[in-house]
Image 1: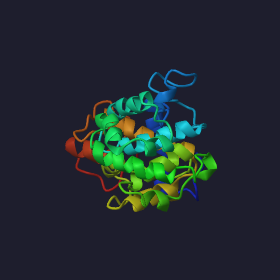
Image 2 (image 1 turned 180 degrees about the horizontal axis):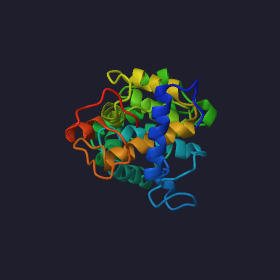
Image 3 (image 1 turned 30 degrees about the vertical axis):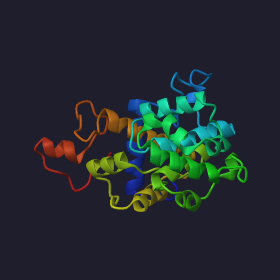
Length: 256
């Protein structure tokens, strides 16, 4: 793993954290593409561990874009149900989303929750990716274009850029903030852009690295670093939360 600039304490901490998570959980194969489930190189749920060259087709790219919208405030299992309904209805492209009535679109994605709002969001994003913009890797929208869409915030915009277009941008979510605070990294956690810039300034700007790191943080948050953490068996060697609950008191700094 090549640092973006000269090695800093934060670079070493993040590299150590990344290695520990990768050793513990292995490649995650994000972003899942349910339409490719079971195909060569894909798991039965559409994950593709160790493969970072996709998506290769516009239809798959748009599936990731739709999934990034639908996963807001819900579990991925619910998104899978909604994506299945969309495929069964023949809705694969931006033009398909624009053609279907909003009320029917909302019904198709009901499983993902907040379906009326998400139907409106999908309409806006589909308009951005309509005939005037090809869904090609080199035709990625700008971050500002995505953020200009109603209901698209930084996390969703960056997920689209990273996973659909392989743009090297680190995705920050609540799991990232929680892990930073518990491990004791010297990273401000009040603002999305500040957290993201800390990762960008410390790690090599490679989409493969940012892809895997974000996915590993999510995996770790689901297994160990939960809201009520499960510390037994945790692969992270030092943690403020764990140390304080052992009676040692929180540390001023900690290595991953």
